[in-house]
Length: 111
Length: 114
Image (tube, rainbow over all chains, first blue to last red; front, top):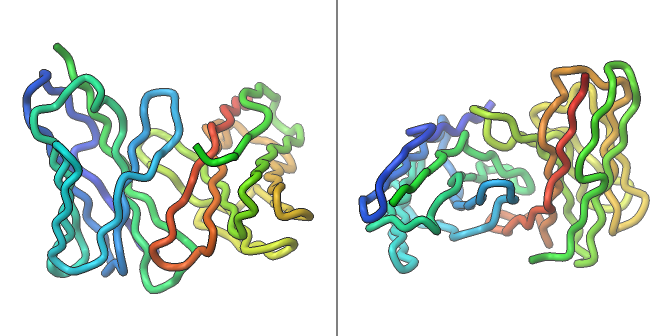
């Protein structure tokens, strides 16, 4: 079945440093979504990418969808303590209705 | 936040006992999902529903059953709980289930099977 892996599994940074998480799928994705889960909370939708090579920005967050539509990345510039949480990518393959979630990257930010 | 509630929020049970988790939504969304979250595995789909009495399996459905008798309620049952089913369970909803549809998650249920 389809697998979606994320690296790293965990990263600890100091506030102000940059952070990147990478998402890799074993199959081509129709689109990709990113979710954030705060500690003790539930996943919350951040953004969706659809086109090959697409880049989207949300303030300090930059999301990219690979040219082959099998990988994606999330880059956070100048992290803040409010960025703490686990970031998940999730993708649809040709079959609608079911999202396959990545394994997640847990980000810890300290002062 | 979308109107999704899960009950109970925490449960401790013993191996071999039946357990039912409830997800309730007030958004009138057609699609409902049950996921489990475990360290190193992310979120894995257990079962989902695309309408009243219409359900299908996800990638980790063994040992679980579901029912949906009303649009707003989606029940997850562990017929005979095992320690490997200790996990955090999330319910999610989406409007159409179509490619690109966003999923909204409930607050989760932490289940411990002793």
